[in-house]
Each structure stands twice: as C-alpha cells, then as structure tokens.
Image (cartoon, rainbow, N blue to C red; front, side):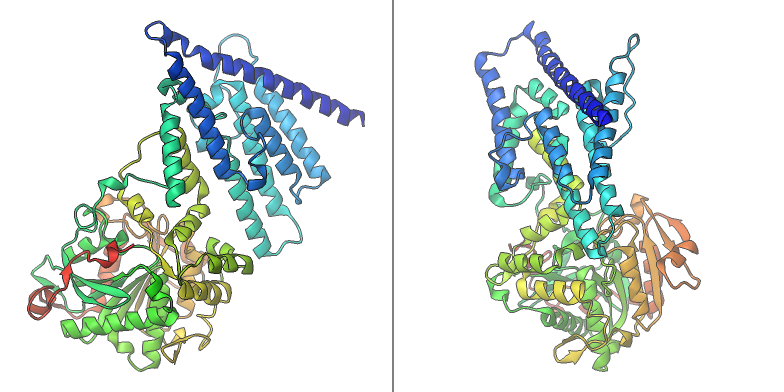
Length: 620
C-alpha cells in the first residue's frame, strides 16, 4: 500500500511539474512575438482577431470530432485536459485489467520522469532522445519544449499499449478482434494531439506568424467541407476532364442505361488483332487508368499497338434503383458482344479492375456455362478478389449493424458516393483524414494540385440493391466460390468452369484487396494462370508506368500452392510489371492488323456518339 501511495505522489508531482512547464512554454511562445514588436506592433484588433480565430476554430473543431455527449465538456483544449481524457479513456478499456492499468500508469510515470530528466541537464543543450517516434510528430517543435515532448510521448505510449491489449486479449473471435482493433485505431487517430490547435506547437507557431490567418482560412475550409459532406484533398480547380486529365484521344461508340464504351484512337499503323476491353470499377471513375499522359495505362497500351476499348459506368441515381448484381454481369456480356460486333472479331481480351474484376470472373463463368466461353480470349485481373475469406479491412463493414446503417443511408435506391469515400478514408485515417486536417485546416497550407487526389474525390453513387448484395453475398457469405450458389440472367455461376488464360495481379501492400485474398483465385480458375505480385498497393501497384522506374514486381515460374510459397521462390524485377503483362498478352494473340476502318473510332464503319471521355464520367 505504501508503494502505491508513493507512486501516486510521484505521479502528482510530475503532473504538477508538467503544468508548470506548460505555463513556461506558453510564456516562451508569447515572447516570440517580441522581436516583431521592434518594427511593427500588431494592433489590438489583429491580436483580438487571432485569439478569436483560435478559440472559434477550437470550438468548431470539437463539435466536429467529439461524440455528441462530450461536446459541452471542456475537453481537449489544453494539454492537461487532453491527458486526463486519454487517462479516462484507457481506464475504461475492458481489455486492460487492474494489473494492466497499474502497469500502464507506472510506465507513464517512468516515461514522464525520463523525458523531464533530459530537459533538466546542465551545460550544453542537446536534442532530447525520446523513446517513441512517429512521423506525425517529426517536426522539431515537438521536442524543443518538454510539455510537447510529454504530450506526444504519452500519446504514443498509450496508443502502443492499447493496441497490444487487443492483440493479446483472450476469448475474442477473429472478427471481434478485428472490429475492436479498427475501432480503437480510429479513436486513437482522432485523439492524436497533433489534431488540436491548442496542443500542436507547429500550429501555435504558425498562428503567431500569421496572426491567426491560418485558422481563419482553416475554419472556412472546415465549414465548407462539412456543408458538402466530404473532405477536400486537392485543389479541384486545377483539373478539367478531357483537358488535362482523362485526355487520351478516343470516341464514345456505344451507350446503354448503365454504361458507355470508349474506343481509343490508335497511334500505331498496326494493332493487335484481338482488341482489349477494360472494365474499371464502377465504385470510382474510369480515368484512374487515364490520369496524366505520363501515368495513363490506357495511353501506354495504345502506344504498344493494342486496340483499347473501355467501359465508362454511369453514377447511380434514382432511375437505377432496381440495378443489381445481374445487371453488371449482363452489362459486361453486352459490352463484349458490342465490341465483337463493331470490330468484327470473334473474341476480345478483357481486364477487370477491383470489383469489376470480381464481376468479370462471374461473367466468364456465365459465358462458360452457356457454351460461349470462346468470346473471351484472355482475362486480366487488377487487384480483384473472387474468394473473400481473407478479404481484408472492408470485412469490418459487414456485420448486421453496419449493413442496416448502409440500408438506411441509401436514399432513393442508391448509396451516396461520399459514404464510400469516407469508408475508404477511415481505413487509413491517419494518412487520408488527419494528415489533411492538420495541413489544410490547422496550418492553413494550400491544397496541392494532384491528379490522383482529384480522382479520389470524384465520387460515384452506387445502386443500393447491388451494394447490399455485394457486401452480404460476397464479403460476408463468400458465395461466389461456392459452385452454383449465385447466378446471373438465369445462369448459375461456377468459377471452376473458367478455362481462359488469366493474368492475376496483386499489390503487396494492398489493404483493399490483400494479396493473400487475390491469390485465392488461382484455386478456382481451371485455365492457365499467371500470378504477379506488384510493389505498393491498390492504386500505385496498378498505375505504375515503366518510365517512372518505381517499385518492383515478383514472378515465379515454378510450383507453389500458397502466396508464401510464391514469395519464397519468386524472382524480383525492378520497375513496372506492365511490360511483363504485355509480353503475356502478345502470347495470347494471333498477330497484327492495320489500324484502319473499324479499328478507328468515328469512321463510317465505326460511328461515334461523342468524344472521349464522354458524358457519363461527368454525371454526378
């Protein structure tokens, strides 16, 4: 008992010391204004405006990020209140028993003592050597003053221990553990002291430098984003579809209720005899494959002498309330038949990206069951899953509670694309939410002009019937790999009937379609398969032009039964996997034909409706 009392007294002393240091840090912060006074002293109105902006931003920010029942409480407005909130929240963690709580508190006390000791050294000033590192606190300002060192080090200690408690807790199912890990990470990301203007030394310094202009600008942006219901990531005014993004020349040659077909203009005298039809995901806009000229997969493929056609899906509205799983499979079959008829070819090469790859697998199975499998010469899958046993973080959104929330959020028969964008942002909250909050709300920095971020924010709506079935039948129940459990257009689906050659690409760091999950397709397709593991993730792992000389990819021409065995015997190649795919595709084709007549969109034999990128991609 005496030991516990002594620990409590030590903690109280350290906490009192922290408050004293906080006051000293505040005084030193105010002294940074003094050198400015020699030349020009800000008038009282400017000082008042700065203070008002700081407090108004803090109040609005708390309304945005705190649970409703806590918004009236004076939490997170200074280091002391923030630390008390962290202590209470960790104390309420059911996975930390009394012994775990005591150890966490004791380790916290020891951490404070160790940190403060470094700032009491006499003689030459040395940079503090702190035990925890995180890029959110990389700025030297987090280490120059002991109060900010204590704040972020305490946060990182708590975050580490709470995460460890989930990993080591007994009696949790895998599903419960993943859900708890995701929820805890979300709270920890939000609780980061970097996110709050009165606790972030970099923000405070910027506020002094600009006399609060950064927070005035940030408050306007925050208000704007709350009104539009979507976080801004880039300067959208710098991009115009068809002018500096999605610019590969082509024509829309076909249109249905659900999609348009774009045929890109050949840039070589001859083209591959079998045309390539690309199915991008309807969860996003197609031009992820046609960003800037240097990043465009479409432009690169055209330059390699491939006849490229691409489906541009329509963003859902009330008129598409009845669109479901069958409609997208039948739409892919329709697109295949349109291209075959328009170009007068017996078969096409196909690519399916992400969810469109999942549907392409179903399409191939339907065609095979109908005896029409030869309509497709080959199939390439970009980060696409067919077996959802190891489907990754999106499985966190398939319990009944979340499915019911999605049903309620679907108005007029479609799900607003902003919901899905927020979902994907939440999966990487530190990078895709809070990083932008700090830079553009708190520091007031200008938004970058980044084509990938523009595309990421150009959301599409989804038919609610399709979306609900997708989460329920595939992510939750994994029915696609069960022969004849699902069907389309009156035809049952059995993936083992797929005998066309397939090229299956996965991203090593993909958190949307993990490589372990993508790999499982090899166990269900019956034709010759080539599996390639690319560096990076769901987007950069796919959009990696050879000229960029980035990342790497792995191939394995031996025998392997699992991803681990593939990696163990794989050969690493520098750069892009696109040339490897091109070599594989050429091996599936018969030769070349002249790029004239039907191979040119807009010709008499291949009439066009409008110029690429078409009107569907611009519909909101």
